[in-house]
Amino acid sequence: MANQNIQAEWAKFGHLFRREEIPAKTVLLDEAEVAKKVYFIEKGCLRLSFNKDGKDITFQFFFEGEGVSSAESFRYNQPSLYAIETLEPCVLHTLTKKDYAEIIEASPLIREAMEEQTHQRLLYVEKLFLSRIKNSPEERYRELLEQYPQILQRVPQHYIASFLGVTSVSLSRIRNRR
Image (tube, rainbow, N blue to C red; front, side, top):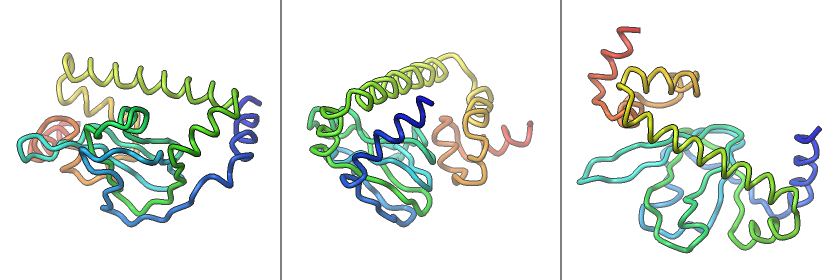
């Protein structure tokens, strides 16, 4: 019932969303650019990445039903610490900062839902951080498959390897041991 209530509440603001069909391999936000939009994924896969000494590092994936933006950049008008890129052709619903703020101000129900989503993302990032410190690449691979079982069919191996902090060759070895 709560899910229906929140969907009905979001529907009141449907006129503020812009539906966009975006090709694969499109950079939606460059590292160091200020985020002006938040993206809600209807179809497709996005990745977050940054450049370290000329090396492209993937650190998160997003799929259908998830929302993404560079939170610190979007909220505080600071340069983004990372890039957002489509990995597949995507259907995205975007909101500008102004329209997002209007929705949050007008709807306590949506504001509460977004606060809950923010807390869930924080918990995810804490778990991700701890996993990087204490788990082996094999354990991180297993966690990734548990969270996103479709990932092997949808994400190129070199991005998965980058996410796990290993080479593509090491990822092949990990996959062969399973």
